[in-house]
Length: 462
Image 1 (cartoon, rainbow, N blue to C red):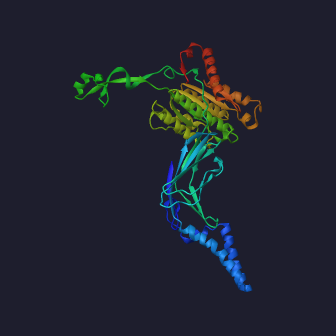
Image 2 (image 1 turned 30 degrees about the horizontal axis):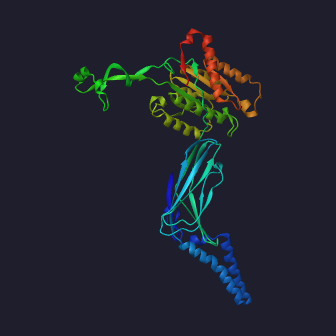
Image 3 (image 1 turned 90 degrees about the horizontal axis):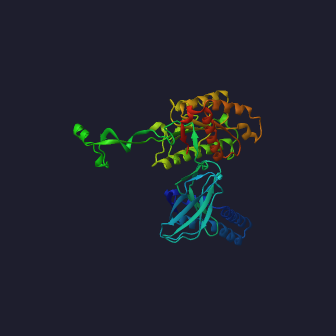
């Protein structure tokens, strides 16, 4: 919510700043006011040349009217406060948000006719304007308007502007509040079905390793007493030995990890706009990350540049415990709202971030791959427990379905599958939910074909 106050008067300034004076009021003359003033001066000159006294009186009347209006508007002083509220402040692309504006008259005088205007980027729609009738002392007026964008991004709203004019429309003064708000348009998130993926290492998904924590089965290793610990957990032998209260450490299941990799290389994606391949990949990454967080995974978002979200500070960048999964999802969506093409040419930085392997499931959204980058992606599989790739068919996205023979793409997919990936091509208009099921079926078929060597490596996607 943004709020602020402003003065409309002889020394009024935007957002409470005092400035202007009579010169500012004269600069506020409208086209009508300037025309009246010019006509009055012209009539006065003509009356002097022609010696017509009546024409002089007409000229003085024409010139005096806009000047009187300037003086009235200049001497008018209102103190008003305004606020803006977004509902909601974060919306998916293609959805609407409502902006609520509120104006309060905090002066002892009633206001005249006011025009309220809010500045919004053109992609959100036309600039909203409202005419407010007389506002009594201590009164308020509330109006609202809707904004909508098909493009991701962060869009500033404001500043809020008030226009004060005289009844004849001769003079108009504009004052602005200083506060801004920001509307975040995030990628569309597609609901995904819960499926079971074969090929995920034991300890991820349904199978869970156990690690030392604060709840679970007893462990013989004690730790220091903390406020709130159950006194029934006190380990008296260790307490006597260390001279302070010690409690039995406990254990709980380790969370399954997942990395969502988004290929943002400009060379790997063609076209732009809401229906482009890159926007599909961004929306797919958002859908996968949110879905896996909801299913209890610790998730991180990784791009080809090597940058990760939530970040490297703790847990290798993974986040998403039960108490912060919603916050983590919001952080990832905010990041994806402004993600853009990178100038990178390869996936080597992402390969380095993946580390030494065993970090759980890898879900990748890849653009066009040349032979070198396909080999790099194949090596990534050995640094994860399981890997699923959605590879965008650049030729089909740029020229439409059915374009090209697809042999180069099939060769890249074959290479990824030989390295252990579950790899699927993505064409224009593809449904991620359907591809999600196909990935499950492909992984199950590969596990059955490979037999017992991989049969014990099962887990749950979601």
